Length: 411
Image (cartoon, rainbow, N blue to C red):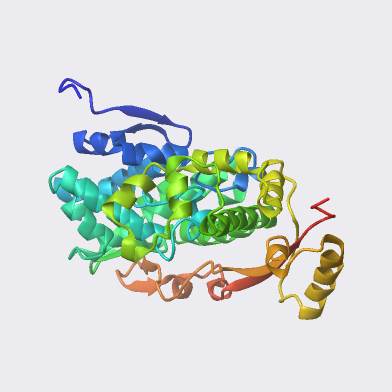
């Protein structure tokens, strides 16, 4: 790269307007192939099957988070919170890279591609490799990301109930889906941030904005992230990858790009997730998965081909959702009816008929948001709030869903 390259680029973001890269190190990280991959990983999985505008990527989100972190640093500095240039850069790097470990289609395939290794763990692996490449310039960012830095509020900015990550994704996802209930005032919340006893707190004037944030998050989960059509589509996507891996295990040949082929034909877990594996993972994105599914629509395996056809054509399974678990009797009645018609084995049938549950907790009192009162005392949000009974939002809400074919699907 030429030494004359202008590294203080301006990006035009539809949510915040112009975003400037803070320094040349940040620019070089953004330019890195590991980070550029995020342009090819959708932020919201298959939510675009419900909200056609939801096609934004992890790249959009990460850049937005960096922008909001800059604002937070500026606000805290004006309130006499000392943050050095190195600490500020480390915060930008940590938030920029917090999602770099997401696999194709984000959360939908978290346990389908690799076994029992979270995207946070993969993010950390990426950060360590980048740190070597950039000669230790990410040391402080890694300390903050892992919560090992002595100033604890830095980690709260990255990961807490009112972190920069949530402030961006709620506003961004609301914008791209058109679900206005999620449109929080991230600027207002950031303007109300302060630090007391090394804790990230919100000044009392910001309490209504925080209440609105909690409500918006709850509504976005039920209306968008856990929308029943998204649930059934993502379950089918997981089923497709599960079937493909089963066939791969039996030695059945499956058309796939090299990165996807590697993860289909190798059992990857924490124990054998090497730097070489990471490099292959860095080349795997939504395009690999979608192109494979298009190919698999014509595969000789009936289950794989039918699931692939259904997903590609948005001919999804029927989904019922309710507050109580579906009785065994009700499930068996539908299973018997379909099994008699389709003559499928129990294993094959489980790809088309299944039940599961989802849970949403709007506010977790175990990791409380602290409000700084006029008397400079700290109060937990649920106790400081006078307008809203937040206690009702602290209980996890569980919903159960049951999926099965709308009609005969293997004719």
